[in-house]
Length: 262
Image (cartoon, rainbow, N blue to C red; front, side, top):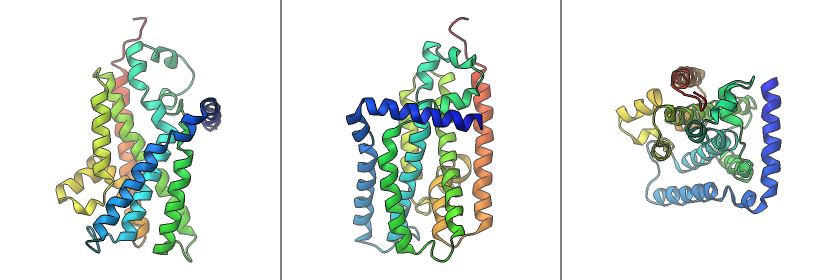
């Protein structure tokens, strides 16, 4: 309960900061909206030449575009501002101030800087998901699917968060962070396509080792196709295992940290 209260306070602080620079607040999420629009144009162009991509029809693929955007923006709203500060905190020794606070260090690193400019993008993504959900008739006559969808969305955000947290935790081992950011973004663009278009080895890698596809296409597929509780259980298990790995890696990495006073 303490951490939920803190999270809400961080959101309030984020809103206050955003209101001080209203133009930035209004335009801050413009890039992500343009990214979604470009992907819609891209896939609409492809589907003008074919009926399916890797077993995904047009409406299913466009649902995936908005699903990936929603996950990305939920992650960006809650975590991106915090974890991208990790390299600077390590380099300057400012991490010392967080280490002495009676709050879980990972929580502080993750949610300290809420990015409220993502609010408009989240509304845009939700509108797109509602539209294509209606076209696919996903939730008609089955309200429980909405609860499952919410669970899967939260789980997908959790996977993406753990992925990026691991990437920026590497900064405890290396100094240069720009290459890590570029690497993570390149991997992200690979993983947010229908996983079936890739060779089997690539599918397995992005499902079990670096579960970006698990967060995106496999999670969306579990809603788009017939809901299979076994598949949903597998997705949740992969997510949990990935979290355990990220936590162990973080503990190992933090042990290498030398404070500014040492």
